[in-house]
Amino acid sequence: MTQTTHPSKHAVRAYLERRTHEVKPPPTPEEIRRQLGWGLMAFEQKVGNGRS
Image 1 (cartoon, rainbow, N blue to C red):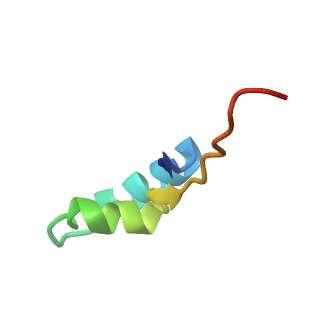
Image 2 (tube, rainbow, N blue to C red):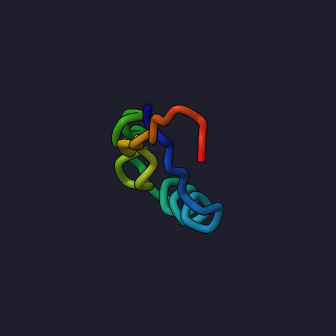
């Protein structure tokens, strides 16, 4: 199973502010995720029999 990481709202706002001042075309969605650190992390699921 994987766990998704999300950037903080402050990081997203700062990114959008920088992008509004750039003249070149917007980056790909993958590049945006990379710049914001928004990706998938490996998540280890502990499997047991449900007993303590």
